[in-house]
Each structure stands twice: as C-alpha cells, then as structure tokens.
Image (cartoon, rainbow, N blue to C red; front, side):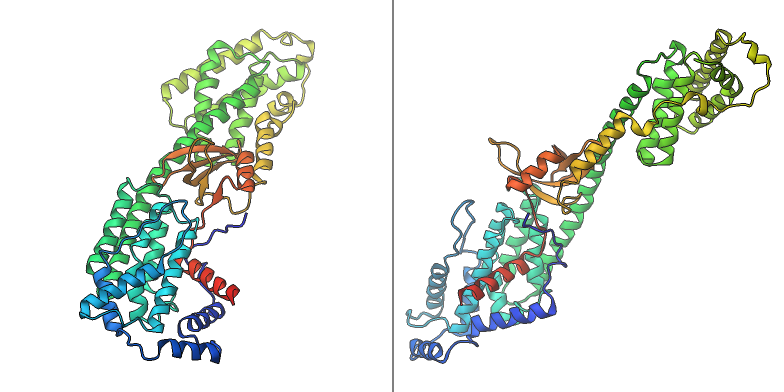
Length: 487
C-alpha cells in the first residue's frame, strides 16, 4: 500500500519544506540558480527581441479563457501541449495588438506558464482525482495562469483561494464516476461562471470558492442523512441474524413448551433486538439478555436432579418477576407481555407438579437454597457460543487490513473482470462477519466485501485507497521533485 490518506490540512507543507519549494520555484522561473554560461545563452537568445507586456499577456489570456478548450481523455499519455497553447496565446496577442509575430513572451512569463502547465500535468497523472473532475480542472488552466502572473505569491501561499478552490472541486468530486449527475453539473456551472467573469479581480475566485463550500456543506448533510439510514438498515439486518444465531444455539437439543414459544421467540427476541440496536453486543445490557435467555430455556426443561427441582421451586417466581420487569421496559404490547408471563407461571407450575423429584423423601429435609444459575447453567458459558467464535475469526480477518482501512475512507474498488472499478466510501465494518460495506457519494449501499478478499485486492492493486488530500500541494510537490531529479 503506497497511498496514504490525508485531509487538506495534513498535506500542507511544513515551513521548512515551504522554503525549499519557494527556492525551487524561483530557480525554475527566474533561473536564480542558473550557471553563468546558461544565463549568457539566454541573454543571447532573447537579445534584440521585443516582448509583450504583462498586461498584453493577461488581456490575451482573458480572450482565450472561454475559447481555448482541452479535455482529459482517460488512458491517454498525459502531456499538456504547452507549445500549442503558447502559439495560440501569441496569435491572440498579435491580433489584439495588430502586430506580427516578431514579439514573444518574456522569459519569466513563459516559464511561469510552463510551471502552471506542469502542475496541471500532475493533476492529470493523479489517480486519486476522478476522470470527470480532471476535465473540469483543465478548464481552469487559463484562470490559474492569469492568477500566477497577477499574484507572485500564488505558488508560495498554500491558503490562496484559487488553490483552495481546486482542492474543493477535487474533494467534492472524489466519488463522482460520470458527468450525468446533478453534483457534477453544479460544479461545472460554478467553473463556467468563473470563466465568464474572471478578469483581474480575485473576488470572482472567492465567489466560486464560497459557492463550492456551500455546495459541499449541502452535499455532506444530504449524504450523511442517507448514509445514516443505510447503516441503520445494515445494523438491523445484522441484529436479526445475531439473535437468530443465539436462539438456535441455546435452543439446540431442547424443547420449548408451545405455550411459551411466544415469550421466547417473540417477546424476549424483541427485547434482545432492541438492546443490540441501542447498546451493541459488548454491553452489559446485551449480556444480561443472553444470560436470561439461557436460564429461561434451561428452566423450561424438566429438572434433571433433585437440586435442580428444589432450585426451580424456590426461585422460579423471582425469575418470572425479572422477566416481566425487563419486558415492560421494552416497546411491546402490555397485553401480550401479560399473557406470556401468565403462560410462563403456568409452565413452571406444570413442570414442578409433574417432576419425578416432587415426592422425593429429601424434600422434607431443610436444605440451603441454591440459585437457578448454579443449578441450571452448568454447561459451557455463552462466551463460547458459535457466534463468539465467529466474532473471534472475523476479528482475525479484520486485523489483516491496513490501518488506513476505516469507515469514511474512499476507495477505487474492483468489482469484477467485466465491470469497471467503482469509487466508493467504506461506511461500515461489520465486526461479527468481517464484512465491509461500501456506499456511493449519495450514501446508498452499493456492495459488500469480505475483509480477506478486500485485503488481497489491496495487496495486488485491484483496489486502492483514494487519498483525499490537497491536490494542489500534492501536484506542486511532485513537480518540484521532478525538477530536482532532472538536474
């Protein structure tokens, strides 16, 4: 796993790295670190040539802003055609000034354009950015070139609104898989409005940034609401499976009198369900519900010994009272609870009346009272149930996943050989089943993955984490690294 998860702040350069980046930018644009020979060559190459003024470059860029189009084609060898763009720019400036093409862009402006184009090339190579969003970002090339020429702090200010605007677009679009949705169209509309209005005033960029931030807040509220409902549905379905497994385990090999089946299979199961949903399976409330279930089922069997008989005789009404009190704290029909408790009392009376130990001569000998738990729960404790074994096995699987695999993280996920990968967010890790549940950008459940299978997919590169970082800082760092490596 090479990708790491970063938020927009954690990927910000430190003051030391910012100094290094600033130095590298100055060296590239101003050739501060160029050798005397290289500087001499540059002077000879440009001597006698006339250069367009910065204002003329900005004016030409404004004219090209709406007409110069470039789109990202997935799978292409990504190369920004800087020379073609500069030619279009020179032609526009020549037409604006009604001059021939003997003039050129001065070195600093030209290398500034080159540097911006390198940044956009890094955007297009960033696998964390969706293909649709790359096309949107390409629309911003000219505004960003203009900003970099108008504001000499643009590359050095990691809080610049234009940089934050591009980061906001990438963050909003991390789950966008195509252009046929309202979110994409809204972002596109904000970008188009910027292209129509941005001339020299950075206020247009601030307006676009605020619009994106509002859009992001609205999307977050809507997505969280839907995802919350999705998690509820997953939890409820899982709770039913857990309760069914517990019932099957505790009832196996035993008989529940017909008159008590409603109590066990409906009333007590409902209480278990409500406690699982509200408190979870690690809570004392859930443990109490399981312990009483085991005791209830065991005491509805005929006593196997004289001690069991005496314990049931002395303590059954206390158990009935406990069950009645707990059921009345749950959201169930009071009438059904009353009938179930009445049937439970009748069952115990019937068991005691028909027990082979009723007429035992030892019954006349005073004995120390023994609890129902002592006499009836002598088998393996519930912690050794198949469900608990399953949880332990599931945890072993989950532990194989990288630490960065956690709810809230976005992934590009392998689906099958014949289908494209999906951009999905991990919503829930079902601990008991080692299942990972993924949702789309709307919060709707799309698919589940076994933890083992997903760990393998990550290892072989079929699926991978999407880093939700500052795309501009990431691109800037990559460009500086490439320049350093080329020296």
